[in-house]
Length: 408
Image 1 (cartoon, rainbow, N blue to C red):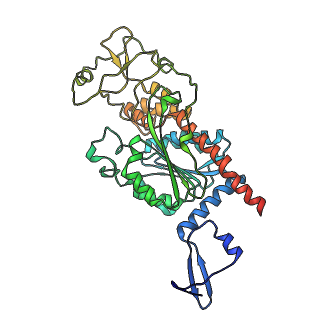
Image 2: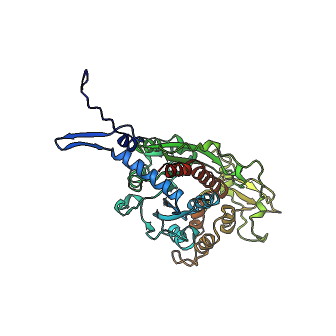
């Protein structure tokens, strides 16, 4: 028909309408051989990933999970544990991190690799060097996004996209996500990440996803650390809303005492020190930090960070029981107990600390052990997030596939 906008072809066909009901726009090509209706590549990817997720949930195939910037795999372990506690089976299919020590511990000791997919792949390299052609599809991807550019300890002029090392990390990350085409992407980072330019760019480039974010305090979930971390979850926008803000801490939590995690350290041990260099800085107004010292009966301590190996003002220290002038750092064993790592992972980290691991000298490296554990996550928060996500997948997403099966 001829209209004021030009020639118009109206196609009335029920099967065509049913095939395209989940998309808003198509490309229509006319030729002498007929009419070709084509989905945009973005819509095609969206339909493929959502169909894959639903088929996995309604069939007997575990969800394929990938871990980017994985470290020792603590985040991956706690999320997987939470998902499986809700009844969602997960298989690890991929992981990448540049730290050889972290990935050695991850591969050798982390239970996430028990029952991995047949084509599971682990890469030890910078994300920027990743050959994305080797990547396979994944249903869920979790990203421990590098936080050194998001930390308040980072100079303001070097934060976010201005960081000289990781400021443009999102470029290769987006390429990897585009290739793997997940239905669910989970980002873990410092709270600043939520309002960062990095996340704004990621959101603008990840077409076909809906983002939800929240900041969780580990202390609210029963940890001794008041560690605040942001959780940003991208869900393919053809799926129901996750409503992440409905995830609340338990109404009642058991508060552990610091003594629950401490070793029996002799009162005359050389690790008790005056630490005058720390105490002097307490009086420098420009630092705005205090010498934070705790006793065994405390139920809340300062946050443990990756650089704990180099004592800083503001790091949590232990007060000597009888001499108020002396204090000490937490030992690697105590640090590991607080982080509640899987047993085999913890044992390997301790080997790095005391020199029994092949990737360190016989002297060992406490700083490397602290860094591996400090880059981990709080157990109860991320297991709760995994459980919340698992319930969403089973209660809100799985019935969509079951309805389709019944209708067919």
